[in-house]
Length: 154
Image (cartoon, rainbow, N blue to C red; front, side, top):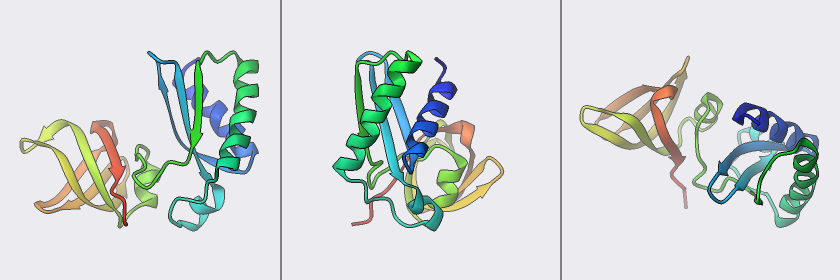
């Protein structure tokens, strides 16, 4: 099964239960599938992530176990949780949704000798993300992104 097919299956299953797929990862050496969910209203209202309880995760986990078995998805362990305060950002919609928030970004290739930046997300223009940091403004293509996470506000 391809990553896109798995993502679509997870989105459809999680969505049918009233949640939104925030992210997922498959760790091949341990055959662990991690699924991160959030309440759909959080996406629509733009509110901060949270509100996912253990019982929500249990419900989604039970449904996913059934669906993954029927679809023949090979995994050894399934973990379902919220994306957390330091959630990963990877899609344009993530950067749009969290504009104005502080993020830690690592690029695949250095810009002026630097790959790691911490700054405030300013938005997305096409496939280019803009970030204000201590040295100015950085604009980078999503394809150039290695990793990005929100910096938790405590």
